[in-house]
Length: 81
Image (cartoon, rainbow, N blue to C red; front, top):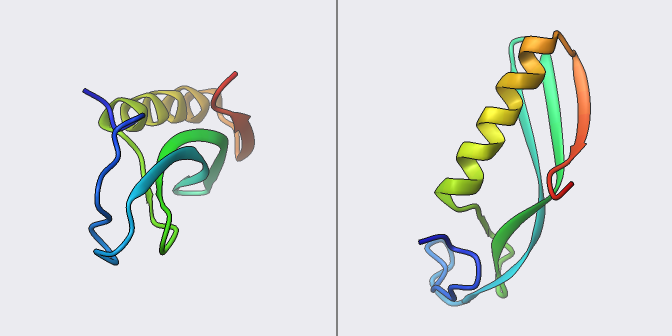
């Protein structure tokens, strides 16, 4: 089961509840910086904390490794595309 569509209480502020939305994720490794835009996430309606599901996280890491293997130094990618 993924977090998308599942409302949960925020683990950080403990007051808000999450809502489906999108976030930007920046991953860095050595000299490489990757920016993923429009990543599906659950976002706290109180403090703005962002939660990415395990499946989305795995996809991010897989795509990041592919870009790293290409030899890019800086790349901005649209996750949803």
